[in-house]
Amino acid sequence: MSDANMNVDVNNNPPNPKAAGPHEKRGFDTPFFAAPGIFDGLAEQNLIRAKENIEKMKMASAAINDALREAYSANAKGAADYAAKVIEFSGANTSSALDFLTDLVGTKLPSEILQLAAAQGCKNFQATAAQSRELWVLTRKVASETTDPIKKSFASVLQKAA
Image (cartoon, rainbow, N blue to C red):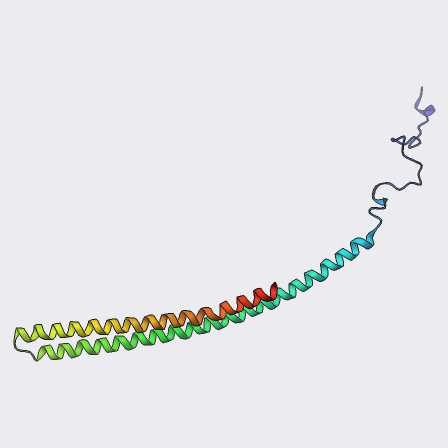
């Protein structure tokens, strides 16, 4: 048989004998994919929810930024107050040491030196204890003033998000 005499029928017999004629819908033309209205509605609802959530996140972010700014400001002020207090204590301690040296130069007997040294040691211990208490109180105040805006902001943001 020659190539010229060969007659080829293409697509005359469907591969599936149960398949009907050329008028039946196949593939993506099936009714499942022919219902875009359902998916359009879902997509629109999801888009609206996403926009609402983004707006909520923007508001929460702005509130948290404001709280962090306030906390940073309080912390910077507290650090400056702490540094000023330390400088004040340094001045007082230096003055006390110089007074001790002045009194020490005026002594003539070893018993006076021992008496002055003991009194100065007691005075230094009391001053150091008082200074430590003041610094501790100031530290707690700064920590509280720094964390309070953050706590309030996060609580508010979490309530709004819920």
